[in-house]
Image (cartoon, rainbow, N blue to C red; front, side):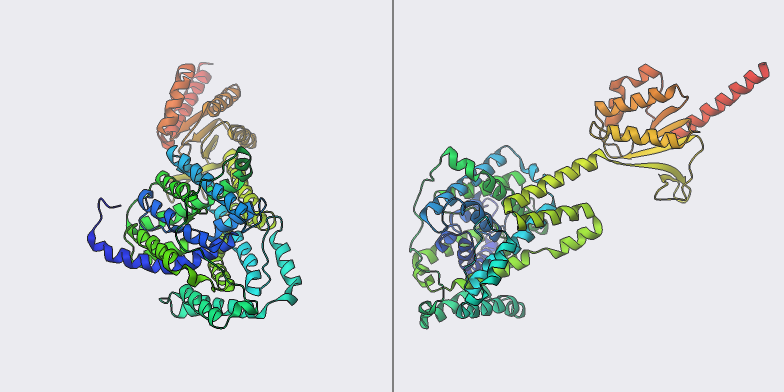
Length: 562
């Protein structure tokens, strides 16, 4: 970070760091509350992890800290093990932070960043949207004064029904504060985007609660926030505890990394620099591991704060160092002033952030482009809402892998014909004007040919030959086959032998180098005496035409001789 640092960037970094700090203080407290933790834990989690990532991460603008999605996962996973807010609950969360960080470090060292490619965008979008709905329903209770929470065993419909049944218990003073905060955060923020509305709401709400002694009238406030920095603690580790936290830790590792790498790649493309996927694992992992010893909850990139950091002019991670120092000053000097901050205002901030997480555009896009991906999104969304966050993302990943395997096992195969307008051989299904050649069946396999789909390809070819009883040549266009294994080439060999006795000859064109090498290693030319390495379809057709001409001449000679 400092080797190539330009002093001209310092002013921009300081300005961006202070701007983000304005958001970090109220948001981190709100997300800690969402996770079932004391608000001060959110502040702790916005100091050391932010500094650690600044030195070890690869993104220049990524802002690390508590985020709504991870807070929900923390609450769902740990509220089953201890009462939220209790010392035991905090111990579980700290151990979860250590597990998450350790897993991320190991994945980074083993260079496993590619594994996240198996989590499709549809799964991530569906999960994030469902998580946003859960967050909104959960925090709606705080705005209404009902304190409805998700205890890990109740789904969204159950929480919503509970809130409706208890509408008679709404605390109107709390609702007033919540609605005013929502209007300010959504409506006023659009009219005056440069005003740090979260800070304005936090300060205004705190002052109103303090001067009018609204806590005595039933308004829930944050309460005492310890003054000073977090103490060094050693997480209590046992095999039993580790086993109980594995599902939650896995969900946090996947979700946190996916959000972080998506944001870092987006900003890197805008800033014309590269991020390292494995280094991102290391940066996040070390931030969590070291943070676990200083009372931090699991952290990842915050999309909202990261974009604010970028838009405010951050050039390097020096901006994050400035943000962390501002949070330190808050902990050392301003912590007592946070006592009267209304919980409803923090809940309104969470709801505002959650609304922006619902990705309707992605759903509409997938409905037009790929219905199977749309199905993955909807299944992930539904499972997350009805079952749980862990089961939702796991179900989405499993479904996406199953659909991937199904697609791989059923590659598209096209029958080709000559299209004169473009002087090329095209699919007759897509281009009805393409003309087939008598006695020649031309096929193209769109995808690799390997053990999982070789049987499907064989059956398809046999069916097409049966549909064309006059076929004497089967020509494979292998231009789209970028990979073939031993099973794939064996199937082709057996097809060729089985039809050889029926007078049907096989030919292959447009081979890629790797496939051509496989044919050579299989010894096809030595076994048959034929050259299977024709470069283009016209070359193969010319060879077939030449052979047909020779056969006709031979037949004519035999007839003349007879």
